[in-house]
Length: 119
Image (cartoon, rainbow, N blue to C red; front, top):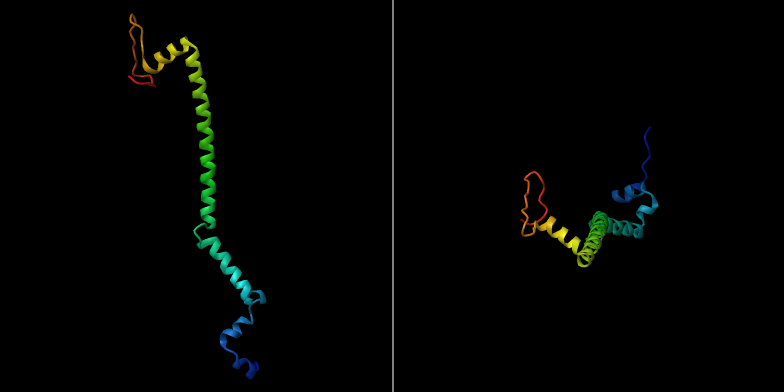
């Protein structure tokens, strides 16, 4: 069983014979240009897909950090307003954070407790 080879097949270059087996949309020069452009944008560009995903995760982390610090600022402002308006709260704050004392008192700091202010 020999297959007949026509002169027409030998007259075409070998590469052209291989292209006949590919789908027509892969041999279209515009489709090839579009595929090359898409590959460049997705994988090789400065703002490729992987970089965009990393930036999105970084944005989420930064937004969470912003929310945390905003809540901290609100609580600190509330505490500041309380310290400005209430002398008893100011005294309590000074005693707890800075270990201040009255003239007739002594302050004992136990080493097992966590120190939260300046000594």
